[in-house]
Image (tube, helix red, strand yellow):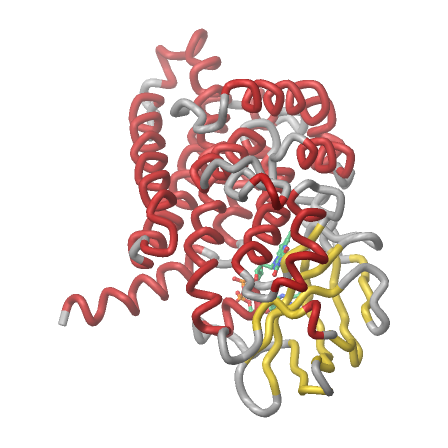
Length: 367
Ligand SMILES: Cc1cc2nc3c(=O)[nH]c(=O)nc-3n(C[C@H](O)[C@H](O)[C@H](O)COP(=O)(O)OP(=O)(O)OC[C@H]3O[C@@H](n4cnc5c(N)ncnc54)[C@H](O)[C@@H]3O)c2cc1C
């Protein structure tokens, strides 16, 4: 992987936390343990606020540094890297809100990991891309909103966690808001067993006439489109960290197995050198786009995110083939990473969703 963009002392402390606290739990997380202690400890080291200013609980670095933290975690545990993405993205939404009241209530707590938070934005993001109907609906009530509906899968949740979602309003437009733990009308229900990501604290969410006061609104209908455009590049680019860490971990496996099996592994597709070069190109592009912030061209961001999915599918499959039967053992990280890479390619925006948006943006260019 490229050199981390974090200061060496922070980088070292996060690396040590991953080695001492996360690595021993990876198999248990794969089977359903939610790594709450690790998440809170990572928050204390600034692991969700690398791109946020220090006065909001951040490290005062930049978006490439946050992507590197997510990749660092993914190299050890893909499921946990998704939780880090969820938490960092909730901090990112709050940072980009123009409502100071919502920032004062939650930003520091979320950025420092004192308050863990889930983002239930898949449905709204897919809805805005013309893929599905919106599930949450509501209307204005006084200074706030009254919202009902259900979302099938939202991760990084639990009884003490914050939830950030968006809903369509009956009189037009959309509102994005936070729901604090224990809000009246909010219920979480257990999900069926997944083939991976079992420790991701994923629940079905039901909202029944939940009242959202003005101090919990991240964006009202007037600013909604501009607000989504503001946070979307960061939302997508941080997800590439999940894929990059899986590719790096797969390279580690390929390198190790080649010490014994190079004479036959050399007949496989996606050799170590090719994957390493592809990862470097992906990281260089991602860091460059992340440095551009909101000015990054959306088409390039979408292409980089799609490349992150494609490369993690290729690399994890190649690592499993390099490792052979040993990689097929339930105790082997090679088989777990195949399932985690598949998640990177199906979580919103899924590869099919990305290709739809890329196709739509390429049409006017072609004309
Ligand atoms: C482990 C896991 C964690 C997730 N975490 C989050 C999260 O934190 N936040 C978030 O917003 N989204 C989350 N999702 C949803 C994810 O981002 C995608 O939106 C979801 O996988 C659907 O995408 P799709 O491409 O399969 O949709 P499509 O193929 O377009 O499917 C169409 C629709 O059918 C729905 N659907 C299909 N099967 C079922 C089912 N059995 N029960 C209920 N609905 C169904 C899907 O939700 C989707 O809306 C998670 C999904 C999984 C599997």
